Amino acid sequence: MSSDNVTDADNQQVTKKISDEYFAGFVEGEGCFYIGFGKRNDLPLKWQIITEFHVSQNPGGKNILESFRDRLGCGYIKPNHPKNPKDKSWVLIVKNRSDLMKKLIPFFDRHPLYSTKQKEYLIFRDTLFQIEQGKHLTKKGLYKIAQLVYSLPRITKKRYSLSEIIS
Image 1 (cartoon, rainbow, N blue to C red):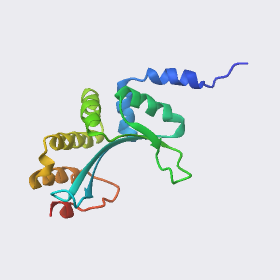
Image 2 (image 1 turned 90 degrees about the vertical axis):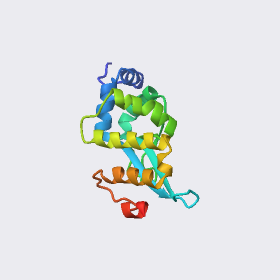
Image 3 (image 1 turned 45 degrees about the horizontal axis):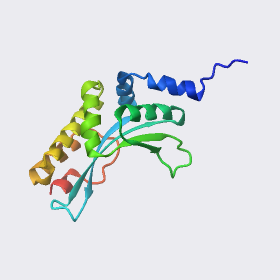
Image 4 (image 1 turned 90 degrees about the horizontal axis):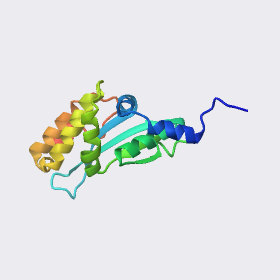
């Protein structure tokens, strides 16, 4: 008896053949170059800059996230919203700044995005470069990063306003 269904082993073989261009396109639709701000009274400027890359997928596409993680050589996969029993999606997250700089940024420099996601990526990359150079530790540098981040149109509500961060 034969079946048209792809077995798990076959499916794993298919994901290993996924092109870098496919991954870039996948990120266009399902990815996020996140830059956030957190209050930290133990820091000189009282603000921490949070940089993370996320890409999510439904349960049937978890193997795509695994393949992308393997291709990048970094990140981890977890349930996207574990407290929501209706959400069964998965998310690949890269938080480590060294991995972001040495693995993620080179990938997207080689495989550029073509939608509005490219602007998000360029601001994300610029922010990481400024952090690497220590510019975020000055008021002027923090102000520049905050202005860049808040220049992006966002559908979600930000926790802190630009004026709170730069005051």
